[in-house]
Length: 232
Length: 100
Image (spheres, rainbow over the protein chains, first blue to last red):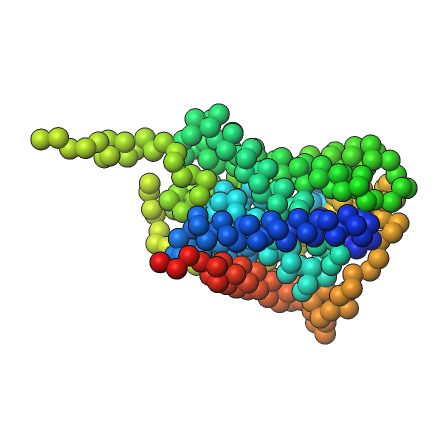
């Protein structure tokens, strides 16, 4: 196994089924909202985001004492194409990983989509928006807020996993000790997530800031003068 | 805002970046157990774990059955994954697009 994906048998059937229902409903809603928030011309960017997140998830980086982690990608996807299309892109990645690469259990697919695609993207994007505003709503603050929100993505996903374990895990270990272990290691993974998210968003902000969904409506000091109506 | 490159160039650069990750970094990925696996092994929450139903599939675990060279297998699996996620995701959004 290569990824931070829940395999089959970790979480019981009813909880997995519940997550599956939430995942299907979430994806359906994302599809509806995506068509309303993106222009037809922007569709290839959503595919690109999915492809990039897939590639990035193949790269496990070392964290402390014999453990690795990789990008989850919720904030990266949400900032680039918006939370609806972003959650959809991460969901597609998880489906392809489970069906084509046997990564992440088939019965756990709903759980993985809820943790990484839905919670990771929507909670992560909400945190991003708060931070972007707090940092001044400038072009620079889009990149900085992406990095900081990215740091929190693995922690959010880990917290949701703990919730799922509390609902439908085995009784071998107390919820408290699972929570402690999960949060510690995912805070470390968050450092990598934050750096990768900041670099990727920063690169797109440098090349085509007009394509960054999370940069819509920010202040653009360089163009303020040009927007002044000409009075004669 | 500053548009330094064309839209098509942006898409090409983005895909090239994804493929570069697959070609250069994926074969060197850290082999240690990831965060969830580590916690599972340390705490014992994995004692109900079952094998993946598709564990014998041709691309299981980002390998390619019949290809022994792990670098080449990772490139093939990664390239197919990049193509599959791009086409599936863009195709899905294309199907539900608002026609104008």
